[in-house]
Amino acid sequence: MTEYDVIIVGAGPGGSVSAKFCAEAGLKTVFFERGRKPGEKNASGCGLGPRMWREFPEMMKRLTPDVAPNLRMASCVINHYLNKEMEEIAVEMYYPTASVTYEPAKKFITMNCYRSEFDPWISSLAVEAGAELRTSTLIKDLIKDDKGKTIGVQTDTGEKIFGKIIIGADGVISTVAIRSGLNPRWRPDQITLVPQYDFSAPPDIIDKMFGSDGLFRDAADGTWWGVTFPSAYQVIFGDGFHIGLGAWMGQWTSNPINFLNKLISSRPFQRMVKALNAKPREIQTHLLPWTQEPIKTYTDNVMLVGDAGGFPCPLEAEGVFPAMETGKLAAETAIKCIADGDTSKQGLKLYEEKWRKSSTGIEFSTGGETLQRLWKNLFFSVQSEKNNMEWFIPLYHEIRGGHFDWSEPHIIRMRQILETVRSYIPQAMPFFQKYVIPLISDVIEEDLNLLPLFIKLTEGLRPKKKK
Image (cartoon, rainbow, N blue to C red):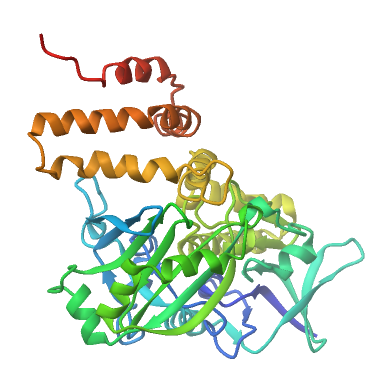
């Protein structure tokens, strides 16, 4: 009979971090990967935020182009705005702002990396620490004792492996979550389907466009906002880029790929493809949890990390950092509970206490619900009965760009802009009161009712005629 202190199902970022910290503490640790190597089953790449360097400084120092050849810094984000006719009416570029307090984050927004490079590297750190990695192994079930408590796992070949603690790091369709009873099924409003296209592009052309001396200096991230498709994200790597979009499963009104194809076939996007000499390389589709609150993440002898626990950010569903952070916290909990001889759900409650105080927990505890409600009813409202992007994009365009027009005296243009803005107030006001004010209230931790003030302000938008 094979026995371990800790069994970890999944060798992605969360599972590998758990394995690394458990092994470093001297626990007999094994982690399983269903693919031939970690990262083989993952879709394309990811953007690694500065929080990773703050939370895992020694580890992230070792992420270099030697281990991830297509690693690319993004110090700037580009926003594209498309109207109902799929014409690009605005483009914005933003670098880190003055309010950023974490020094490295003043230089970059993300480091972009293929998961096929990142996952093998991070799993190698766990192996280096003494964890045992078993690849090409599918965990099909959990082993339970006569009291119903999980005591091990069973592979698809029938092999049984026993352990004191099982950590589920096996993604959105988590065998550990399902078989332990922690999450038998996601609700349609808790999960998103994400189709994306992966493109190859010559590295020298990418450098000319997005390199340190390129047209868009050190840009490697982008968002596409539209009236006829949900918000789309673009991430640029050393030899290509991917473009994808998503929405909650209960929100799609037609095949998700149809919405992505609208963007891909648009003239603005095709101009970029032509400029980069890019070629479609692969089409990918994956599921992601996108919740207002993580699910129950622990029970007797079991903890869930990363996607398995519903930890991706409630705003944009970024999941690599939450997986790594919760993986570390689960390892810390396992180390203490095994030392104390208490791996029951009472002992493992420490895990939830830890993650709720963490950076990941803060995302959910202060505004997770209001953030997501705003996001869902604005940039992802294109399939809803009330498509708020129909008024938001032209309103935003008018406010941000109207003053650049020289066709009239400036004072006349200002009056025209104010009149146009005023015409959108009947649509914008209810939205603002319903979704924006609650979010601001969460941010400043104070109840607000700004509707009377806004009514008074908007009444004054109509210019008065001079006598």
